[in-house]
Amino acid sequence: MTVQTEIRVAFLPELAGEVSNAVCIVIDALRATTVIATLFERKCPCVYVAPSHALAESFARANGYALCGETNGVRAEGFDYGNSPTEFSRLDFSGRSVVLSTSNGTKATAAVANAKRVYLGSALNRNAVAQEAWETAKAEAADIVIVCSGTNGVFTLEDATVAGLYVEALVALGTTWDMPSLADSAIAARRLWQGEPNLLRGWMEGKHAQHLGDIGFGEDVGFCTAIDNSYTTPTLVSEEAKGTVACPVILVR
Ligand code: MLT
View 1 (tube, rainbow, N blue to C red):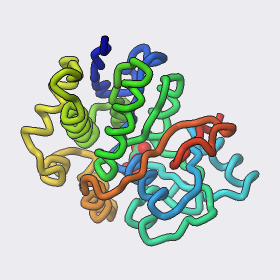
View 2: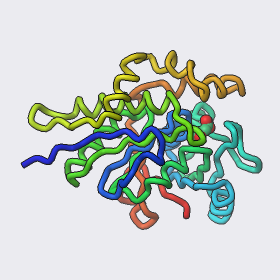
View 3: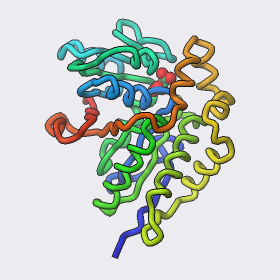
View 4: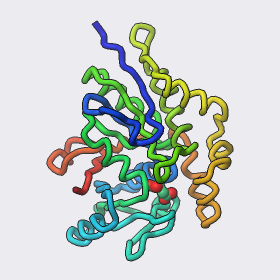
């Protein structure tokens, strides 16, 4: 008998609930999870995510990794790079691991690290991540929780609409005899995206996209709205399991 997979959306990490038996997809569309997809596109072998700048700095400096991250959207003091996907898209990270610390995305990842499996998804790699999360959920008889990072504890339009985009992709992966069931939160996210399927137009109504435009990162907002142009599947793993996945993301503790 097939176990029906439920899809839920947590509009903030603190709403994710118990995830130890679930597969999670963490979303920080503007910009952390888009940055992570981009780093793997640029041949980065491994992305370490840190829940604080201090931890990121000591870990990166001790290991000779590139130190990246932002405070209020701009490069954190003393860091090598900020959190701009367009900047990363022009760089080559072959053989160069990155330590990333951001205001929300890396913290959201840490918050659900005890899930059965954690993927980091953006609009860019939506189909690739949805497909892998679906296959893992089927193999593990697990539900899927899409976790929106939000901004400093506040709901954000861009994460919620990308969550809706993922719900749409996951539903498309189901078959007549194996359809996922949708929690109300998943229905709401899907309807939000259906209400304005043009991501850029929808996001520009929101505070975060406007803030990034105001501080000179308007190009990043456009970059993050591209759908399905990356086949990367960033996956949270332990240091020991680094070699077992194509795009390893490791939590610095
Ligand atoms: C975050 O993690 O809060 C974001 O990626 C912030 C940003 O750089 O836009």
